[in-house]
Length: 186
Ligand code: IMP
Ligand code: MG
Image: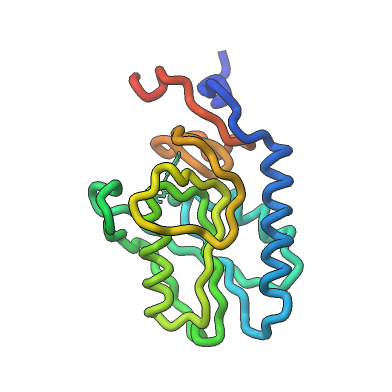
């Protein structure tokens, strides 16, 4: 039988239709917020989980945007309060003092990644640093952090699809789903 990644999904948590409506709503919030500014708006995607959200979001934003990416990983135990993160691919850009950065993330869990990155990019000299996330698991927070634009709050379940992975798989699914329990145990 041919392989099909959808066979590993127990439940669809966010459908393609709901994802599409959510992305459009965030794009209009971004237009509303940045429409009157004369600095440059940089959408900064965090690899790799944000790529699908970023690609869809940028198509619906009407204000001029530039794009770039950073890649980060958690240092050891990501559930530790104040856990630092490891920058694997940094942002190199000349006129940060004239750049409004909007970090584009797939999901906020502990909050460590985004709270660290916001401080890091401010220290680097960005004019402003704000954040947007497709998904948010507020019940998992270990640091006090809230994104400026939030797509959907979800319960404390491990989700995959629309960019999000389990062991590098399932990023290509067009919806957000929960894996069958046996996938984690085999
Ligand atoms: P935080 O630093 O704990 O907020 O971690 C956020 C990162 O953890 C995200 O960018 C994801 O890469 C990963 N992550 C958290 N929850 C999930 C999930 O349910 N599925 C897939 N990746 C997740
Ligand atoms: Mg990520």
